[in-house]
Length: 175
Image (cartoon, rainbow, N blue to C red; front, side):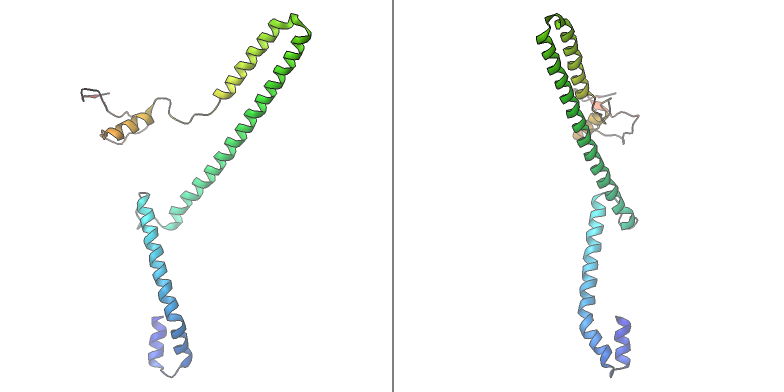
């Protein structure tokens, strides 16, 4: 735009340049203001997520969110599929129980066999409930970190193999 203005000052008689400047100078100024607002908003978001806006370009920053959203949607789909499978298995077990009850009503000699099958069905139901994947650490490391954060008692950043110092009621550090 500056080049166009200089060109117009050199050739005052050019009406085409004059018209272009009159119609587009305001649009360009608005576009530059909007770009500044967008850059400031991007810088604030990058800082919010703990990154440096000078070293983290949008081409690096936004793909992180794209991957997260894809992984989240996939996890939702997997959870829904697992629920459907569990429900189908429960329905199948209930049908088997109903068949066993019908057979027992016809033949009282199968009572002990029916009890065994009911026990097996109950164990299968419990196994289905307990077969969910747990992604938390089994050693309580996450709970230790949260507790230490709440107590402001962190001496270093914990990693997978280290422990956080906890305080006992006498406020003496212990391992």
